[in-house]
Length: 74
Image (cartoon, rainbow, N blue to C red; front, side, top):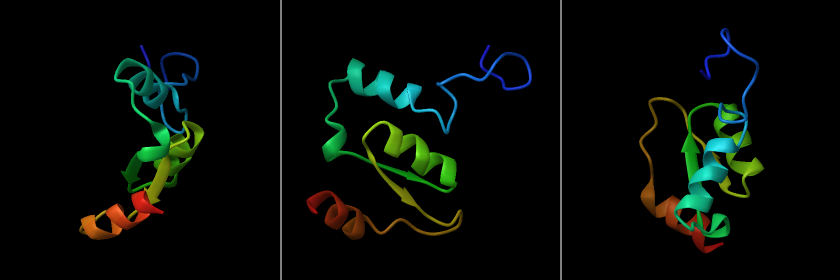
């Protein structure tokens, strides 16, 4: 039902933040203490729209978890 060619645009599809906001509410997540790592600008846009820090990486880039910890600490 959420496919872009079948129905109208949906906030659940990135860059909309709907799926993140739903998860934040359902699991009592603090967005200020969260990050979303994505390989497309729309991933970061969705994260930012939900109050989550978005981090953009290259598709083949290895995640530097120490850098993620540093971002969370800042």
